[in-house]
Length: 210
Image: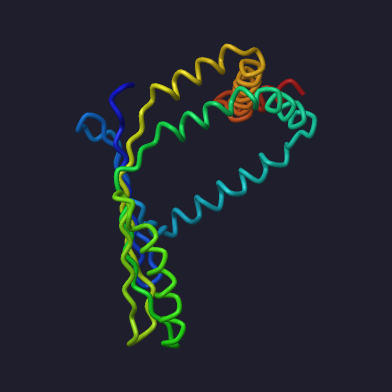
């Protein structure tokens, strides 16, 4: 927990198309890596996605107002003990570097000059900060909006873990977590009973008895 995690984040915009990647490393070992480019769905995936959406809508119909009120009451009581976790997370972050490069161009050269001058002023204000770099390039021969953002962030888990343990020592936080776990286990059990392997067997047995 004393050794920080290293988070690398790259994001690029080209012709209104978004792309990038995310990496998580610890002691030089890559723990997680993911591409941020949206994948194109195949027709079969679209059909399956439509079925999943209808199933989610059917599940959302079972919204219980009393349960939501009970959860909000528990969360409100636990909120003062959860705030230190958020502050601990913020203080555990350390920005190693942030690089921003932009290319801007509009149909009107006046608009391009105005916005570019404003961003240059912002870059001049941020220039004394060694961890931040900002570059803005005007494009006068056409309409263009593109850019790249790369960030390197360190995250230490010692303070976050300490604040989580402190929060768990309070009854209100434990009550909220127990309520969430019970609700999830009850929903899982209902789903298993509704779609279990003996579902058809029960129907057939019921028809035989009649």
